[in-house]
Length: 258
Length: 263
Ligand SMILES: Nc1ncnc2c1ncn2[C@@H]1O[C@H](COP(=O)(O)OP(=O)(O)OP(=O)(O)O)[C@@H](O)[C@H]1O
Ligand SMILES: [Mg+2]
Image (cartoon, rainbow over all chains, first blue to last red):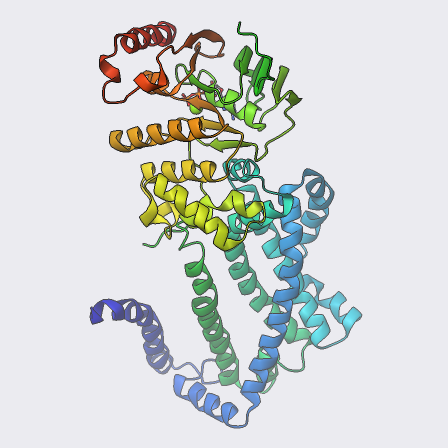
């Protein structure tokens, strides 16, 4: 019983441990200089140092705040507009061409304009994140709505459902599989845009921290920043999106456990 | 034709149903020139070979499809779309996967604004009726095919529609349960004013249940025959029906009508 529960964790940890070992051994074997690839010990020391003076936590919190706000704004727009396009022919004819045009230039392509409009700082960065999250989840929502079987609409209509009942009992839960996919992948895109935007338009945050470090050849900080982004994302995915999935679509049998 | 002073519940007048498909230039005709009157509280059963348009006709009465020509009326009024007055039991159940069995069955009552306690009570009664009392907390994907079908029947019954449109509602349940459900359906039908439009492949079932049995020809479906089931309800006992000579005669006649056409 106990081994059964441990197994997935062991399996998940193995590749990480493998990379850590390679990272420890290879650079000294190939004599790579520390400014190009510092050893795990150096990165660890740096982590202790930056945790100690509080600056690391500060950068993390600022980045998470921007990401959260961008995520909320982007999805608050993407989900209703996506549903409107998914259910309504006219909304689709009216909006889809424009949105498709804009989609190709979503995200970090907007950084220059965002800086002009909002100046360096939170405004520009959140704009860029919300923008990429909007476009990345919009199409998921549309597909989610369009893939709901017609039989469900028919069933609730012959039970006397109003338009609002249909939205609540058929459209939103019916699109949920895609919505979760959309939340998850848009969040991943959001992370990338966040780092990109902070590199250019930030004076704080994890992206800024790594860029600032490069100028001083503090490669440890750069790698530390990358690791932290990965770890936070991993935690978010496991404890936010996976949870949401287990509570909804897996419970309903729409997604099946292996 | 029986002269009925009362307005027919459902009147189908020269209706044809066609599907327009992107793949074909010509629309596909599923039902052709059907004219039919179903009186209030009548039990009409429809039989016919697979693909002859039974589900299509049912969908048109439900208001999901608009007939190409002719008209379909409910209580003398043109049907504009689906509504709670016509409950539907779908051939593929159409239970909502994200609602428990109890919530699925209480769905129509919820749409009417009934309180949770009240609708759960009514839903439980109908689940018990359909032998699903133990399954109320389950989600549809955790049920067997026959259980899903019973849940779908319970959902329609609980909403107490004027007309029940049932598309092979007992096809996936075991023989034992089917008999119980057939008897229950007749009992409910007798106790209420409900009008039933019932599609089946089983000729025996059609005779046990129906006031009349409508036989459709193979696609595009036209009315091939309308058979009055002139066996008294009190003589339609499932255990002895098989040995009733009138039953045997009707069964042979209807079977012949269906098969003649399928061949
Ligand atoms: N959505 C659709 N689009 C195009 N053609 C359809 C559609 N639904 C049904 N048809 C066609 O209409 C005809 C009648 O189908 P229908 O489902 O009404 O038959 P049925 O009598 O209910 O058959 P079964 O006994 O197998 O359920 C068939 O030829 C079928 O191919
Ligand atoms: Mg059918």
